[in-house]
Amino acid sequence: MSTDVVRFDYSELSDWARTCLTEAGASGEVARNVSYYLLEGDLLGFSTHGLIRLLNNCQWLRDGKSLAKGQPVVLSERAAAANWDAQFLPGPYVVPQAIDAACKMAQQAGTGTVVVRRSQHVASLAAYLTIATEQGLVVSLMCSTPGQRAVAPFGGKEAVFSPNPFAVGVPSSGNPLLFDISFSMTAAGKVRQAKANGTKLPYKALIKPDGEWTDDPLTFFDSPGSAIAPLGGEQLGYKGYGLTLFSEIWSMALSQYGRRQGADDGDANSVWIQVIDPEAFGDKQAFLQQVDDLLEDSRKSAAADPQQPVRIPGEAAQQRKREQLQQGVYYSRATLKVLQRCAEFCGVELPKAVSG
Picture 1 (cartoon, rainbow, N blue to C red):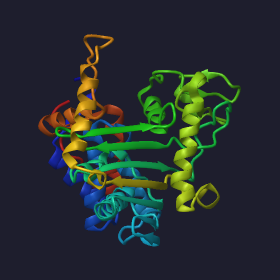
Picture 2: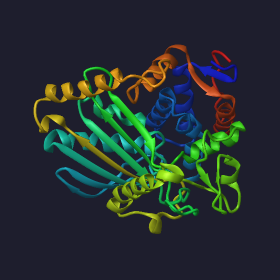
Picture 3: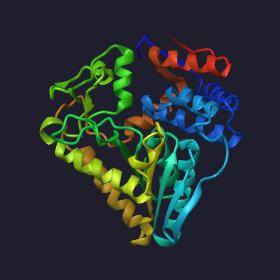
Picture 4: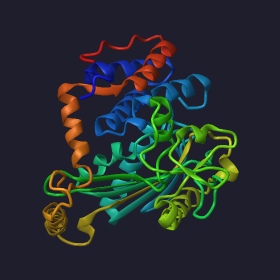
């Protein structure tokens, strides 16, 4: 582990984050959920969507841009579908409720879909997947940001879309498959992280206003700035472009809340959640056997690099979580500065590091 990394005890960090949120005005239940799911993102390795977002959440609470308590409003509902208005409640508080509701629908009807409008930033989608997989259910999530334009359509150089994440959770006889990606070449948070760390992006993921491709994160913050390319890049970006349209129609259009309504909503998200109960299609063990066979065939595939055997999506994340729970949650020095700013903003002293 790099000497530029600082580790903290998970329990102490959890208590600190919860106290920060409470000091910012959050109810106990909101504070508990937001602190838990932000930290879950860090444990799984999604550091751009972990506690680095705590300061934002506390600021939104203080400024009234995020509700400190309350419940989403059900706008429309059928046996296996619903449309919710989160009223700017924090995403890590709303999304678990929406997944729970979709799980109950799936257990009754075989499937359940909930779309949510005006959820304050939901952070890492991967953090929520085990809510469903631990019940033996299959889950998929997508979200978009009506107030953000950061991603260009394929063939374009001007930002139109948000860098929309997509996540899937599938139970197996062992560890679940946990998959979380963006439909853009990179996430805006990773561009900000590269800027903060003074590094280039690992590949040319940005399109400058003159149409040139670049890996320089600083160009994203110019005026006018570069746009993020859709997944697939210069040659195959039509694939990411199509998937981005898919995610925005499923999240914004189905929730009937997009850029025309939410242009001034900042980081607030429109979210699509679907849960499927495999037992609605047949024997549960037969489903698990099929999943197990697929995963085992993947693992046995001859590795292009013998030093890097084929992995299953989520394996490294779950191993990372186990290690951090034992050895301490780790942060870069750049992220530590943001946590210290949050501590000052909320007047709650950051716990002492266990190493680094």
